[in-house]
Image 1 (spheres, rainbow, N blue to C red):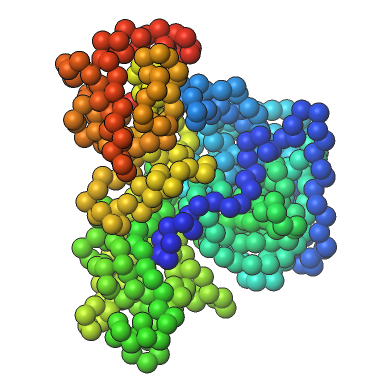
Image 2 (image 1 turned 90 degrees about the vertical axis):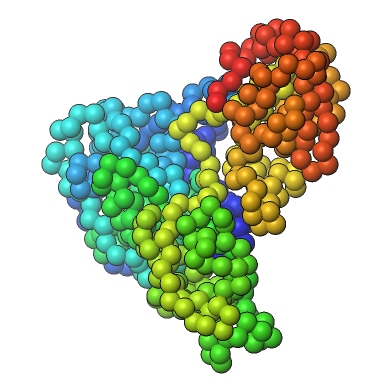
Length: 495
């Protein structure tokens, strides 16, 4: 991440979950028509390689993390790749309880299973349980990154019908965008070819090869869909070839642009020289100690960094972080910096971001004591209009306090009302700093601070103001189980 960590926040409409199927009593609109694009119409043989996926998922309610909620069914698309597997979107198969696939022109559902998932890049591999099911179905070949104006065809199973749909359009923009599924940003391609709910995971074809995977749309604009290009697809497939997904790396540094001439002169840039000035390097990233605050980043991965933080990408300019999409976790990325008047060539090891993406496929952790519900301060907590203090603590506190604990601190999510916890002075969405004088860094340390306390009182201290909340320990212990039973909480913790 470079200019602002806020760019990681999502703004696209996701083709996932309940959006994949119309609500009860509604009729899904037909796929949007687009004008024809010459030269991109696929050979009919491609159709047999595109499958429909039906995922039954179950996701916990963030407000009641012990409650898994009711199962939901959504549909998406996928296509056969080398090795007898099916490439699709991670959000199509997220939080899965059961997956079935339907082949082109076949009404018979077949059991399937997930092989690998990359939630950060919104890609997944699925295979049929019947190892012979895809025999004779040709895998689609992944081509090269498309160019602006290239003709493309999207194939998939969008809402509005049960069978395969094909729409045509052109590449209208190439950019570096955040994923609505994970919040992580990657190289992506915009097209005016219709991409509707259910298209997710389907191939985007150009000149007889796959040039992308449809993955999201912008509901506020017409004829604006997005697909992941071959650079991202090949990175994912190479990554999972060893049976483990490591993810896409990030530097986790923040920088300021140097468009201002006085700022450039101040840092010592020569005439015609460009770059951005680093002002924060996360202490938990491998770049810490190699890159330093005050460094002017001149080149990243061999690409010259402009004063606005962009690099040349073909005939366009994109945010410099896009260069990292070429690298794998553990790689060393060449950088050139200006430091105290000296130009240095360095190599920086890269790893996945310190800031976690949204969590899927795992049950959320929580702790309930005497009706107080505690959860980690995580990406989910800061994704839905949280108080300013939570945003600051999650994204920016580390900048002003480099030695502070990593994101994932504990917050009081809510209170299950009972006389024992009534009028507690600490409000919901507060970060808990200490309990009974012990620093709280995670749910485990919170549980220990409660269980080891022999004093008459449990004392909770919040961050940012130091509000104090007090419970009578004996009364809280006595009320703990009755409160769980009253609110149908099956277990008081999942750590």
